[in-house]
Amino acid sequence: MSLPTYAEIKKVVDGMQIPTKAFIGGKFVSALSGKTIPSMSPITGEKLADFAACGKEDVDAAVKCAQKVFNSGVWSKMHPTERKKILLKYADLIEQHTVELGVLESMDSGKPVSDCITIDVPEGVHALRWHAEYADKNYGLFSPSGDSSVGMITKEAIGVVACIIPWNFPLMTTLWKLAPSLAEGNSIIIKPASNTTLSTLRLVEYATEAGLPEGVIQVITGSGSIVGEALGMHEGVGAISFTGSTEIGRKLLEYSSKSNLKKIVLELGGKSPMVILDDVKDLSNAVNNALFSSFWNSGQSCTANSRIFVPENRKEEFVELMVASLNETWKIGNPLNPEFNYGTLISEAHFKTVMAHMDQAIKEGHRMVCGGKALTIEKGLFIAPTIFVDPTPNSDLMKTELFGPITSVIGVKSNEEAIEKANDTEYGLQATIFTEDLRSAHKYARAIKAGTVSINRYCEGDITTPFGGLKMSGFGGQDNAAAAHDQYTEVKTIFIDLDA
Ligand code: NAD
Ligand code: MN
Image 1 (tube, helix red, strand yellow):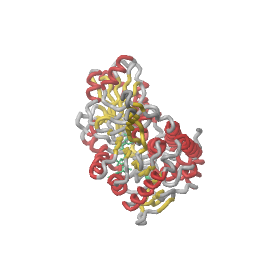
Image 2 (image 1 turned 90 degrees about the horizontal axis):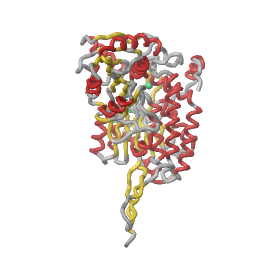
Image 3 (image 1 turned 90 degrees about the vertical axis):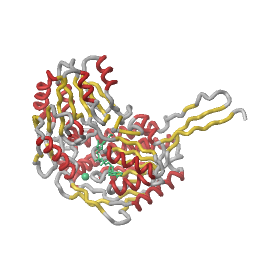
Image 4 (image 1 turned 135 degrees about the vertical axis):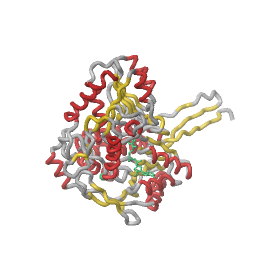
């Protein structure tokens, strides 16, 4: 869709009704305790609203409601084709509100509104439609059990599913999880990150309008440590699909082991590599992708390629090209102005963490070729795109997910050395390889330990390919494609004796 002008967006901002209440039992409600948390704008530094700070008692109420709705069969036993129709209608309604949702997402997170309107909302809608269509296409199996029995391998909805969402792609991640879990007939409870509650709360307003029965979707806002833990420990929750940090992922496994052994699926952090093989003649495509991958969403992306391995004899050329193209690629400014494509960081706390890493890296004396500082643009939390060259192997620049606009270019003497170093990380989410040689593409894609390896373009695949991590980047399942539906179903064997 064509982008509205800044003047038009300002009008949308001025007229915006900010959602503040949790959505429990089909109604917008305050926390039972009456407590609230302020929602701060990363663009102006001002308070946007106070939203419901739910507690354990709100989680209890939501889980009870979700169980009741699930057991009633109003959604779980609805014909899959009917569920599909409702979800497709839901997708249409969301699409019709693209600008409103995109603006809300940008106000809340500091992401460029241009991205929110042209990427986040459309991709989310696309995911919803894809999974809606799959509702009546997810077949079971027959087992090769011989003539005297029939073994049917079926898939059933789990029941109450909680989706815990990070703040970096709030609306899109919500739709990635909401779509397959609902398509399979579950009752779901969404826990948005406390920095980004707004688009999720607006999203569910359209659920009722689309015909989703009351209580099939609920949203509980509040602090992660309170609401997240209460969901994790709850005996009535059958599964949790989580996207977030490795640290909280570990906690969820603990909650599960201490409670009802609920199924846990974890999409976690990364320190993803980009590898430019030694056969690449024209570096421009790799340079553009390096800039995009490192600095898109101000580097707050779980697959950001923050370790870029380049043949030693091309390194200076690569770095020069990156620095020269930087200002053309990234237009930095108020993210609500659609002319800009590089916005703020998410929050003051995160801004301080990233700047502390930056200051540490500078103090350690690694070579820095651009950036290295915060930018004063109005009152926003901006950090300049920053490139380091050849940081030492054990530095934070090489080991730690910084989740900010900081990337490193590292010279290597051979393709083998590049792959070995690319794999020298505890993570394994995504990797990008550039090559002009078909054999190298296959050979080195196999050699890299990552859930997704993309060749000649930085990407995470698309809705038709599973997305998840290896090593400490993930556990228990994937988002997207048919694989996502496995997160929200359980396998049941039905075995019939034909001889008795
Ligand atoms: P986070 O782990 O701090 O928070 C994620 C969610 O967990 C939030 O909703 C938060 O409120 C909740 N939470 C916090 N404490 C909790 C607790 N004790 N129990 C249960 N839930 C709790 O992560 P973040 O800062 O929101 O997101 C950044 C991280 O997410 C990065 O590490 C990034 O790599 C990762 N990420 C991964 C993917 C992926 O698909 N692999 C995608 C996006 C982000
Ligand atoms: Mn916010």
